[in-house]
Length: 108
Image (cartoon, rainbow, N blue to C red; front, side, top):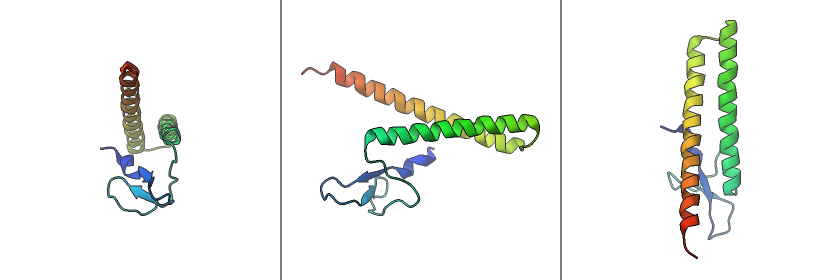
């Protein structure tokens, strides 16, 4: 399961208000402690940044494990999280590429 999918929010387009709607629950509560992306590009940028940070954390945990500073369980957790983040990013990239190819095949 992808844990970060619950953090996706959408601004209301019809009312013009600044309240956001949780896509999973449909509630109008604003997210606490997270920043809502106002554009698709910002959302992709935030997702890419989180993925890079996760990969860097796993790399640092692996290096610290080689030094003997970190428990093996922590390294496994970090590497598994990095693997999940990378697979999610690859799946999103594939969907974006397939959507682009589909749009490019449309006749005008």
